[in-house]
Image (cartoon, rainbow, N blue to C red; front, side, top):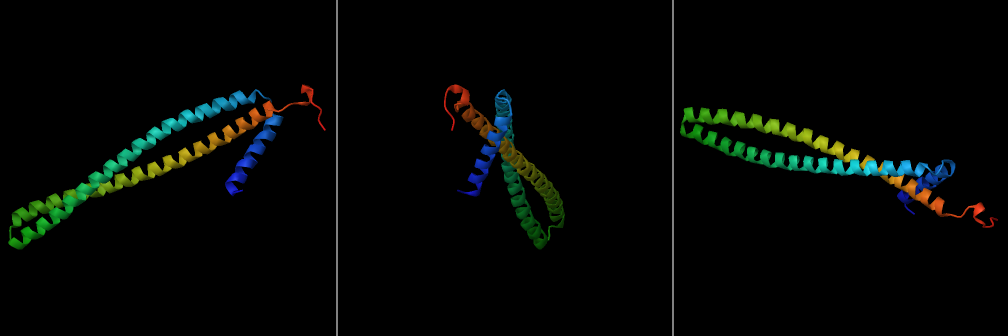
Length: 156
């Protein structure tokens, strides 16, 4: 049995013990909580997909900007070599503007990637909470399906 399997079994046992001590009416509250978490997970998955699309869009835009920076750098060098100082100056100003734009896009991309990582961590946390609650519900259902001493069975 893997460590994860052992942890799952231990959680189920703890939920079973808690279920034995808690009134059966608690199952309704747990089911409502599981449904609420599932709704939150769906909403957060949608947000995560939107963030991913934004990151991909920023990456494409940054790639285009950096290609323009490389092309314009070559153009400025060529203009300087042929002696067209006025056009080289205009191209250099444009190059500075593009470099500034690329820096801003890199900064924006870093922020979006950090937000995405935080959203992934939040989703994992919600999934773990939902899984624990579902394990507790399963233990409560199992407990409810077991015969009790008052069902006419003889317990040894």
